[in-house]
Amino acid sequence: MANTYLLLKSLHILGAVIFLGNIIVTGWWKAMADRTGEPKIIAFAQRQVTLTDFIFTGGGVAMVLVTGVANAVIHDMDYWHIHWLAWGMWLFLASGLIWVAILIPIQVKQAHIAREFAVTGEIPENYWFLGKLWLWFGVLATVLPLLNIYWMVFKPS
Image (cartoon, rainbow, N blue to C red; front, side, top):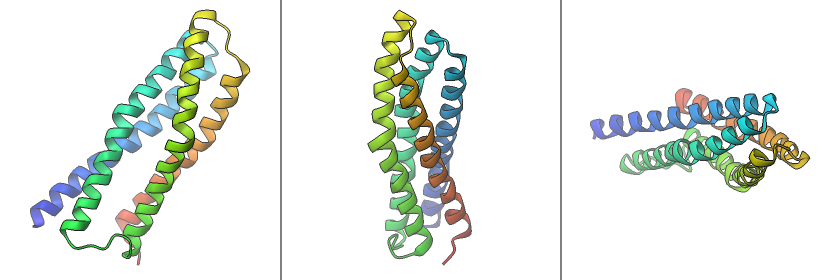
């Protein structure tokens, strides 16, 4: 069983690295692309944000969730009553809720808008407004799983 625990823990950490790495780097590249003010660069970056979130953020989330829950279940850990596991789950779920309810819909809207302005060359004000919302909620959705590092490493009671 120890080997199963360590294997799942290793895959859990890998999932966290992929997930957190992608959300941090994606936010950076999108912010830098938007700063250029160049419609074609921004449209390209917006497409990549959507694509990489689907592949890497989604893949990382799946790895973290499956391996974390599997390890808890296999090793009889009550992840709703062990404080550090419960905090980790709630922070992860809160971040996921922000992604699903706010960030992904904004990204989809921005991707549609970007397809248009890649051709017309005119970026509408709505794109910038959505970009500000995406940035603020994105920071929040990134900080929450970063707090998980504390809970997962220090395991406070």
